Length: 464
Ligand code: NDP
Image (cartoon, rainbow, N blue to C red; front, side, top):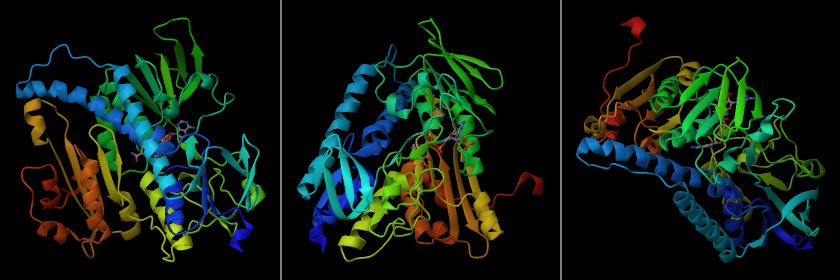
């Protein structure tokens, strides 16, 4: 029956999730086509994780050069060349995008660089060619895009940029204002402050990184200020106007009456699933209120022959999660090895400076789910900072279930925290207990050794 269709599998979107699924399905013998309207590699490679991490490195070098003075280095008159950096970053992004394309071709996937929209549950229409293509099964992996209020909600919003445009700025901003207090707002506030840009972050809440462990949020919030970012809380943008001043071409009014001047204003107030204009209703695909595709644990949509993975499903907006979801789908439907990704204990990093690494439950979540929990935590100046004069402290926190001492969550703010949490994530996934951590011998002298040497339960000040 499969041969009544042009292909066994059509994949919409050549980002992290779509590419993994398409390649594995093709390698398992399926006839696969993948459609991409922009560039192969998706958000992660083209305008997300990858170029962002290069920016973090660029920014961190500035800090390290300054700190090297404490170790006897003389590095006066150093300067940063944005256009040199930007060209090098884009060249690497182009190289990686090319690798994605080659891998798809080598696996025998037909790559079609056009936009695809549903005509019905087995048919896609392509733009600009107008051609129609049919498939027995379809995978939607169209990702997400930055969300912005409409001009009616925020007059002057058209003068703002999002993280998409940030990667293509021709010059380093001089006065940057960022809206939001999530991953993207905090990461870029640090990047640009580190590059010497006058940076201001405007957040509607009290403490950034909503949803993270409270100690992490506090450390990151304070860290932004220590890095020189002006942090304004409890308010949002009310209006943005253009001015004739070349130094400050944009003038902002906040709802609390504060006035700000800037040359670049970035909105980082969340991302929405890319389903607009996709024709999901024509294929019988149900969406949630935010436009995300509703899927079951097998990533199957409400249409019997259509699946969805990655950001478009509004589950966890993380590249490695999209890859695992796509992998599970391909193995299940084309590889005869059914499995699906479990979304518990996913470790992740936030590339603020210093980094956040986190896995498992926050203290608040653990208390809500299990009542009795033990907390182990420490805050200290890492050894490297002693001579450099950097006052930044490292935070390590372990959330442990009291009844059986199982480690439910680990939260780190400090140098290489994201690298550390990748390894700690294995132990947490395996169900390690606090005594398992204690039995593990330290590696000395490291920052990470604190993870296996925290002995004393933390007692809240009120109970001391
Ligand atoms: P987040 O959901 O992380 O944060 C959105 C921020 O915008 C929150 O602070 C939120 O406030 C605020 N906000 C939402 N709506 C409004 C509004 N109408 N007006 C003012 N403020 C508003 O989104 P991001 O855009 O930062 O990132 C999107 C996702 O991308 C992340 O959730 C993450 O999954 C992924 N990502 C992952 C990275 C990584 O792994 N290192 C890096 C970058 C992105 P409030 O807190 O009050 O809700």
